[in-house]
Image 1: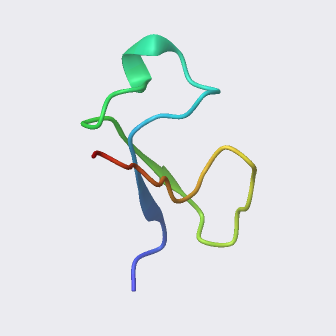
Image 2: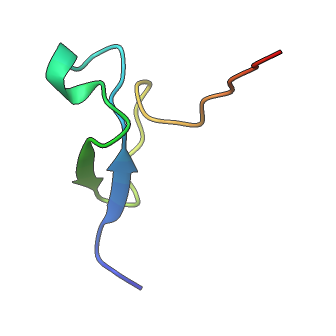
Length: 44
């Protein structure tokens, strides 16, 4: 397994250019914070 996990998309804490679906970043798998996680989207 790799050393880092890929983060896709931005969060409320990022600037506008990083709040795109195509935005990629990396993070240590042990790192936890409030602005990274699962998003639920409902489209009727």
